[in-house]
Length: 283
Image (cartoon, rainbow, N blue to C red):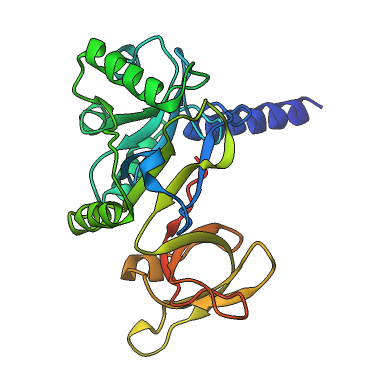
């Protein structure tokens, strides 16, 4: 009997250690999620910002959490710099540095020198009063008062029409950015997926579940050659491009969710020119 109790205690201790590696979890906080910009939308009604390839993080005045609800294991000094107001934004390193950023913020024990490189880009105030234009102004004031270079208010600007929006998109993408976000200027604070928030990228992106590793041939012999994935509606297709050699050697696990880019859908509802982007991080 004593051995049984010892085994149980050991198991629970190990579970505790495993849990600490990803932070304490709770129910995912309600947040606003974007839809894809429709060609009929008038962008003049929206405030526009760059779409950053960061990790979503929500601050409630005491605790910083991922969108999953798991606690971000940020250094104490980083958290001490944050204001008392609730904030919604992204932890960000630099353009095209998502994988490096992901590795930093997932660590159970944060490394100060790494976190000194991370910026917290703020684009919303959870449950904030007034329309989005008013909340954006309040964000600027909060960040100004904080006077901390790592806390940044995401720049919000207006465009006159679709032509101006396209020019701005081209400018951001040429500089290495992902695309643009459009937030309805007179919208109150809401959560859930809504056309109050829209995204515009040169390529569409969406998610699928990995169901099979297809062996590589030729120069990819001994590695993964392609992934067979399943869309939310049950349709399956193969992705064979977009992988680094490192990903081919250690492919995403069966059952994991990946993000891929594509250029619209075929008449059968399958993505055109699908290309692997990254594993979706659940944190």
